[in-house]
Length: 110
Image (tube, rainbow, N blue to C red):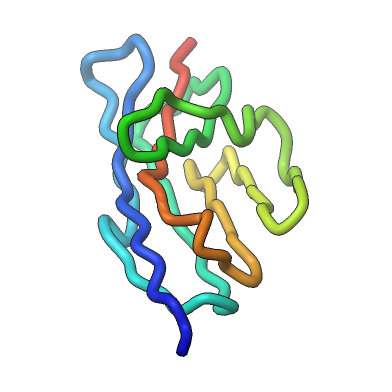
């Protein structure tokens, strides 16, 4: 029997009140062992950086990546940041039950 993982997605913005940040999909269920990608797009053209977080139920935020360059990887997690397209993605490979969490992207405006 395989476990179903629930990933809840949310977002934060930087200092700019005019900033719009969107994560797609907003919620997601995948089977253990599958891979998935979460996309984060934003409207601000002058971006200092973008950060990915996760939050386990009842706990604080954990920083996964602070992106100022194109790609970073940490184990089964990989993030890409395409500044000119105003897009970042978080890719989870070979999902495990411990990946069930809320994931946030946060844009830091200049």
